[in-house]
Amino acid sequence: MKCIKSIKKNANDIRKILLKNNHISRDYKLMTDEKYVYIPLIDEYDENLIDSIKTQYSFEVTNHNFTQSQHRARNFIDYLDNKIDPEKINDIVKSFDIIGDIVVVEIPDDLEDEKYNIAEAVLKFTKRRSVYAKKSKIQGIMRTRQFEYLAGEENLETIHKENGIRFKLDISTVYFSPRLATERERIVSQVEDGEIIIDFFAGIGSFPINIAHKKNATIYSVDINPEAYKYTKENIKLNKLKGEVIPINSDINKVIDTLPKADRILMNLPGTSKDFLDVAVNHLKKGGILNYYEFAADYETPINRVKKIAHPREIEVINKRKVKSQSPGIWHMAVDIKIN
Image 1 (cartoon, one colour):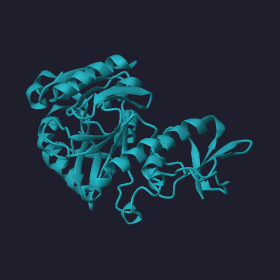
Image 2: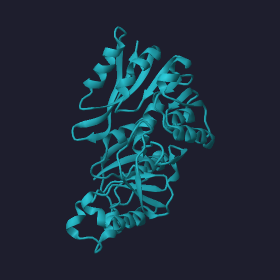
Image 3: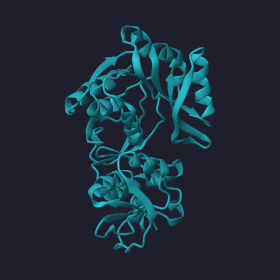
């Protein structure tokens, strides 16, 4: 089966990243020989995740014969035996988000009467503190959603650990996605020491603090949500930073003229980033980098949008990627573009 073949020096660090992203097959045991560690991968592993790990560590994706591990619960469904009608099992949304010690699940309408059984199974499987269900989509300029308490301790505030960083947040009052951890690492790898950066929609400071944790850069962390601003200030104190994060609670349109010209601007608000493109392009230095995100079906849509706004300045596409699926045929697209 497919696996990662790594020298022993790097194997534990790679294993931690794979484990955090649920990419290690639990059906088989890790194996070693004199030089290498072989880490079994899940069948449908994310090639983008593997590529991002390769930017940090050298390894090979190959095939290997593994010893099957003793039986244990492979997912929370195993805890629902004899508790839910077997015909309903296939309707359960088997993926969930873990934010700190809170698990966030989705309960389909036709399984509403089984939500507490599902939540208890998730609690047992993940061994986290609390389970909540999504009760709304992300709403309004504050980017918040409603949750329903289902199991464990009723407490919406938590501390999420990512890339050696701690983020304190209340999941109901601010926006945060643990699924963007790899994307945050990717942006950090692009930044050079000394950069001046503006994050237009910074939330709790997840991109700025990731950057400042490793790079000696100055990042203006702007968000309109006062709760996000509050937690950004707390998160700056929680972490040891090489660079400087300057939190600002405002609409970016109201403060952009008070900020210095930027070497890099982050625009991770894929639903409405396009409405702020002219502001961003005009505030970039010559040769500045735009890390731009948009919901789109193809790469040409966001690239052409930036090209049109930037005209007559020339643009250079440095990188483009699909961050995650948004809906059938639509992706959370990322394009990194130099504006000359």
